[in-house]
Length: 184
Length: 184
Image (cartoon, rainbow over all chains, first blue to last red; front, side):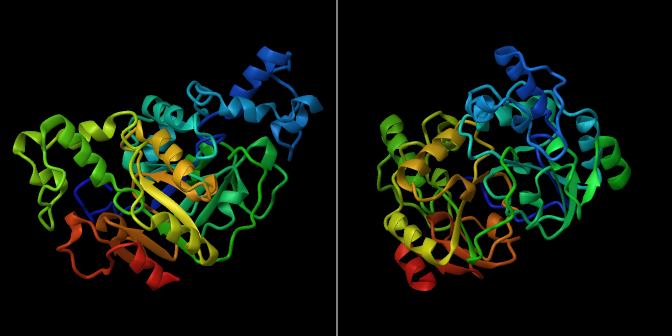
């Protein structure tokens, strides 16, 4: 785009990692807000295969999208346990890219960039992408959504989240400890 | 990410199009600011193969990056002649994605999304990506930077801009009329 051209690129295998529900505990942030605004219990039963909002009273079904559109929503989400340490280790063996489907949420873009700068300062801007569809060329993808994994031609790791627990046919990782064991 | 999963996707060939100096006349915006702030002529000679800032007095060499970091810089850039009409036509034959290397410039993200919503409202959020490296899986890429084209495995169209006029070895398009003739 605006920089002097360089065609040199890292030759390590490319590993593409999602943000929400993979390195960022976005479900926790939603629960904090549902709890604050509607008294929903933080430990509400999350039925396997259901989205968080499908476990809530019907009148709250659309509330998640209102939250997700708010400026600041994505700024103070806790990192997933072990994510920072493992992603840092993965960088020694892989060219790690953080790819988040974010362009639906205008207000999420700066928040997500700031969040990464704060928690993952070792990821350079060259390795961050905010997308719609994830039309990425890479060797491995870690994601909690099969809509992102389904069309990916490399190795596909489904990162467990309550909404995807009934999905079969994908190599599954349940946490960052398991990712470390598989890929390091 | 946050939506209900769907694995259905458009089966038309994927065409990835860059923003700056391809659909957006970013050079014009830089010249407006150099003219306003330093009296640089709007029709300054742009030597083939040189970046715009390399044609300026040496003390202004770093100024472009200061401009590019300013909030609003990317908001009021004129579209390239013929870009809107041709991209709209291309959508009938291709699954068009707008992919801009933007994550270096935090303040560009909302501006770029707003600019696309204003000038290219027919491009859905699913087809917009703000990246660092362009690690995209697609059939055709139109870009003015060979750093983006060099590692792309599909058909590569180098969109002419003063800085790339000395580059050979790429299929070249000089304007949107030529893109239309080639791809429609």
